[in-house]
Image (cartoon, rainbow, N blue to C red):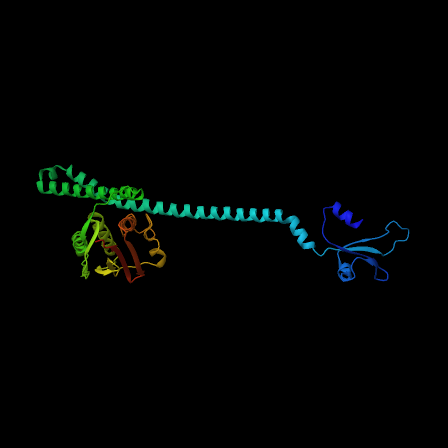
Length: 335
């Protein structure tokens, strides 16, 4: 009867039972003498003969040895579904937080870029505006020296604006990989000298100095001359811009692992580890509050990294705050 009742409730597992005399605390009957201790302690029990006029303390107790396994087997689908749902909710929440943080970071980068671009464009626009006002003066129109001077100022500032716009457009081209490299054999030392010719005027204006230690015996690489020159120029330009006082810059070369290493060392303001890990990100610049004493869009190092990847090279940076930075680029030598 007990087995039939249990099966009727969907409980088809082994069990032990016993009828216990509560007054004498002894078993009247059981189906296992070995399990009597566990049967007597079982929570599954019921009084017998409850309809008698004089109730007795006799009761029936049932012990299920596989109770836990049976219950887990019954609820594992619901339990697994609940765990899966909780994991999905946690994943969605984590993704939402990640998206919010990413959007916040993008917004900060966008605002920094807009501020930098505004300051970059403001100076040449103001200069051109003042020069145009001056050209409207009748006395200036009659003086050829002043006239040529103001026209040259307008021309120079116009070229400067064009270069800034070109930098922004250039990054869009690089991002789409929509560029072609004109590969040829180049003497890296000659390329360095060309870049130095372009940057020397800016260094000299600040009473700075550039030391050359061009020790690489194998100087030739296969690369694009324009882009390689720009890479070296951008690194030298950064070394100059981020030197607070008179710039002291060293550019050195050596051969290593079948290639050539170009190292540019400065004694500038340096960077923290957090900043140096992010400097190759597009538009990223070290936070300086509302100060814009260092010009730029945060595109130079992104350009350097992109072009070195395209040329099969690499770049590494080491920096300490207030001590300076070392940029080391590696270019493989083919043939």
